[in-house]
Length: 429
Image (tube, rainbow, N blue to C red):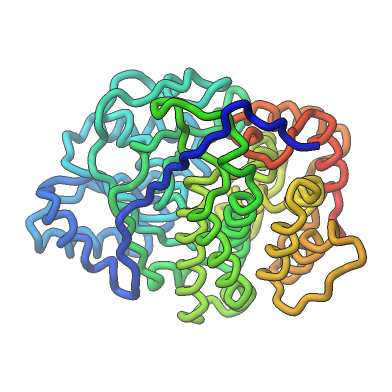
């Protein structure tokens, strides 16, 4: 089953990305970049674990040499919630005004910085801007401050995207805020900042990279949408020639670096390739979009039971975002195979060059993904993180709230389809 041909097919796609500065030692040039923007006082958003390493203090000292003051907010919550974002926003409002916002950390810090930037420059509260149907989906009316992102994990691609992801605690759902104004002004990617990333975090966040690339590559084509007025086009415009290039390159980099980065965390070359892969995937999905695995991941994370993954803080149960995305990916791509068989086969061959094609090509990409997941220590399905068959109706309900993502899938997605994907994902091997 595929989408019906639009009466007036879209003929225009949009592409956006931040300025990029990449390479070992690039983070030492933050002060120069802030000064070149005329910044004299900036908010640095980071997390307690990173703050304990001394890296934020070192960076604050470096930028002071350019006569720039950094005010540090160090309480970013791993996997942000509406409550944690509100805390960061209130801190920024109390300690501002600022000329810019700097995010130092993984996707949690970058997404927190995006929310802070939005709510310190625009009126209203967080729920006003969260995507419908969870929130009101309001667009920012005013320009935001320059946001500079320095990722310290290789995964989310948040330094390249227009999206802020969060858990809404009362509704037990993960959702987001999406608007082009949230995209960072500049991404400074220094692979040296990722060397302390634990193996488990490298595995989970790396699966986020992989699914970003795969989902944008297999997203419905931009030409399958009905033509929209310029003001109505959304950041997720569907697979297009530019996003395809970034996705393919990201998968090629992952094929040669992912397993090594997990097994040998101090391998600088592997870390550099993973950092590139994360950025490239972000530049792809930040325009084309993601679909079923990410839509499924939101309720998996939002409805977590007692799972506490090693390598992450143990003070609360959580399913890390990249892990949650991966747990239904093999079966999601089995479902979408018939919408674009050639793309699924091409992706499998990029991820595992030389792999033997199975008799049923629909099995190819799921088999490649399962082999990778087993090799890097990802749990063997949603059952391995505590979910049972009786939990599936609630998971499906949470997935169906992610219509912004499901609309990007290459074929229609209904409750029966999502139920089948979850049921087949209880145990992947």
